[in-house]
Image 1: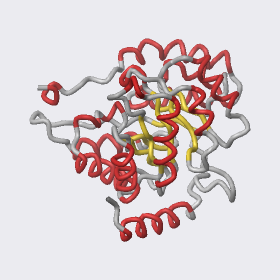
Image 2: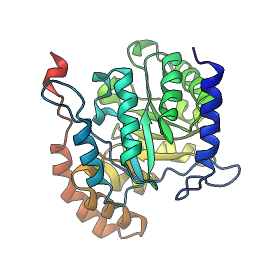
Image 3: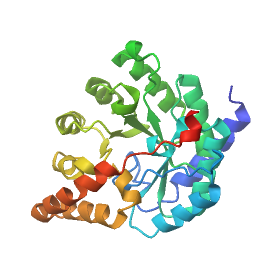
Length: 289
């Protein structure tokens, strides 16, 4: 359980962080934060003995810091968080916070199977420097994960989180897509700011944008493979694994979409499809043995 001292320190840290107004992060009284932009989901390098290679992690961050990303996503699917202990997950976020440029946002994956564990991990992620929590759907009992159950889970997490919450739907890994009706309900929560949708169903993404249009809620694409199509239906950015290796090109595609240069954007999107397909997560073999 979380003691009073933990909550007090986290709340104080949150107040300081949100008062900084870093690059549009503090978006004005009565408004949720702005998460629009491109984010590479940072990989977790491992040594040959399956230990986290923090030196390589920091080296990668220094390289990624040269691109005009909005921020970084840490401990997502690309970060192979299921293979890490709780202390490793927190240490990775802490190291990223220290190494990344100060004007970038840090979205940290804090999802766990239980609501209580997710709340505690979210609070801990905030303590070590996360600006927002990106929370994957619990999925072990996916057959019981109705819209009502997921709304209850995310509402409780958002109620108790000291930082904004981003929903995360990745059915390829969880076997569960966060239902649109649940997203619409959750979009009304003052501490839920958006969703990363990795399902690749652009019609579904457009429907979420349409049904949450009266809320201060943003949709991020979960892949560069459908980034142009996502922008066309109202998404505001993407968490794109391809940005780890082709950061300049993914940011260029963002600029072309935002400035309405759709013909050039289409040509670039076509060129990025094959490398995006090839850029799949390679699971560290020793972690599975």
